[in-house]
Image (cartoon, rainbow, N blue to C red; front, side, top):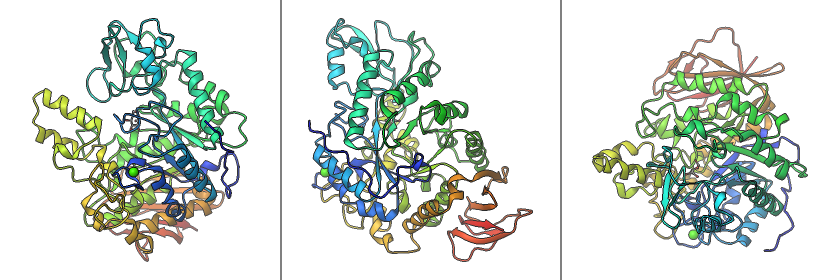
Length: 550
Ligand code: GLC
Ligand code: CA
């Protein structure tokens, strides 16, 4: 392995909290751009689109996993932490991508998946080989399993014939959980992180990082024994000491944390504690879940305001929020909280306005900036995601009919987020010249980048303006946040204040015209709006507007 001279962003400053005024763009490499016509997106495909990202104005790219993997969970099952999967390219391709980003003033955030490895990782291959293998204790082995369930359906334990013991896998059976109690495991992870930082990367998005500390007794019961477990803070502080401290530039760290509470998030993101810069919390994307994610119900707007407002208040003094509607695990926001029919563009812009005007670091998931929608997902053959496929298999085994299961999975399946990026109206949506690994959404004839890039009224141009605003208006980055109209189920409203400057943000979450009454405000200039010449006090269907208060 040869280490190249780390390349650094050329045009961005090294100020400590650069990520506070940043917008991060998430790329799901498999579905972004295919450079070699095999139907799978790859690194050179991404490198070919860097001018698009620079034009959009984002500050950093978070890359979902590109490491060697059997792809049981599309790369979230890693078999080699310091390589590149041949489907995505080579380390040279990676260095070229990194240099290309840095040359354009953008940073690169890697996905760090260390709650588990692939079962094909050499560590696990060794671990499973015998009871006294030195790496036996790198994973969780038990003669008798407990009652924990996998997040991908079924038990969280798999019997391994070689030694007659069971291993723990909170996700698929090809994703055995690492035993963080073992200091050698932690050392190996930190060494790997340093390796990537030495190569020049600028941060880590840490996959399900709040699951790494389990109660070592592994009691029956489930999540309370491993979500935000006993040694979580200790591990993150150790990681900070061993990997991040003393670097000459500030690395962005964001921890994906299902089930995290505000009080815990404040601890995780308190700069004085040296743990993480921010976390991804899940409350707002669980508000439309019923008994589970595949039992969706309509969102009540007041619940969304109550939740996001509480997070804004909770991390106002200490800590920092991340802001997102979408990622590779969530259905498309315009289909979910917006209107992907007649008001697709308007509602996409409204949702973007509301999110980007909150305090925190916004994340844009590929295609969100085009107003991409959920996929048709008509039959079980349209699904690829292991979570959906396992759920279907388990439901059918329990007596359900495939057609019924598909109907329940359609709105929430992760495959909705994973259909290829829609670059143009051509047969492969400009994503590929081959048959794509997951079909392109048929609406790419209308919804695509080429048709939007030069259109000032497009969703894409609107995202550009929002990103620009965050860079030019310190109040958007640093201002206080106050939620208004908490009981209104139609209008999302809040103010931001910084010194004598104040902004009012209004978003209509309905297809009706709504009259808003806000006593004691005098509005000045319009900073941005989804419709030309908005009228204060009246919101047209799905309209959003940001006023400066005078
Ligand atoms: C995270 C990832 C998801 C993956 C899971 C297991 O939630 O975002 O895609 O399936 O962790 O790694
Ligand atoms: Ca390819």
